[in-house]
Amino acid sequence: MNMGNRLATVFRVIMLSALAALPVGMSAAVQNADTISARRAFVEMPIDILDILGKSTRLDMLDFYAADSIYQARNTMEGLSRLDTVAPRYLKVTLTPVTTLSINVLPVRNGDILMTAYTIGDSDQAYDTDLRFYTPRFAPLPRGRYFKTPVLEDFFKFPDKKSRELVRRIVPFPTMRYTPSPDGRTITAELTVGRFVSADDYKQIAPFMKGTILYRWDGKRFRLEQ
Image (cartoon, rainbow, N blue to C red; front, side, top):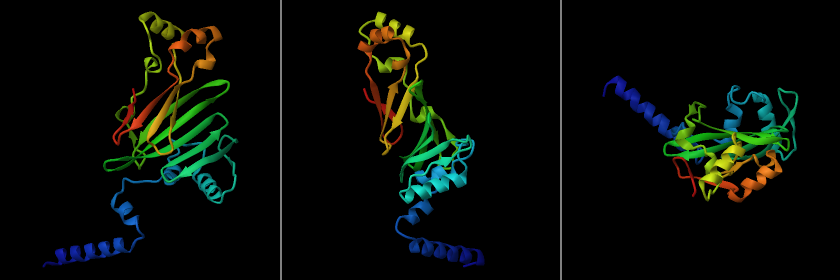
């Protein structure tokens, strides 16, 4: 055996011994670099994705949450932010009185991907959600690969062409709120224009509305349940 092969063999033995000595479950994480937790994603999220909270502030929020302490952290807009839920594969944070961010870690064939749902809105503004997907290293992924944005017709059952045209006229610019479940298995989509059209217009379209629609994760993408 030449020197190069001998060194390679010694290196493999050292690495296998080190992996065997790790706590249960940690060796798999070392072997698969495409896994991540929601907590780690929150801390490591780049500033261009989450600019309202610095890294040290995020760490403080997690420490207080782990200690079962209610903590409202001052953000870069001089407002207050708070953690609502922290789980291994899900995290939700209220950034401002009108904005929230949730992070889901979704299992795929070769590891994990991240899904973020950034929602803005309150009683005076229609809720609207921006849904995005990333690798564990925060490289953007095409949303269309994992989620097909619903169209207006998905939220209604039209008995005829006239009713379809009526809805399109009353709701020319639909806003939607997406609510991912903490386990990452579903996304509930809701049309949020109801309170922001006139009472007479809403009365005309209400008989055709479905309410919410549901998407279910199948290991590759979210599929709309019919």
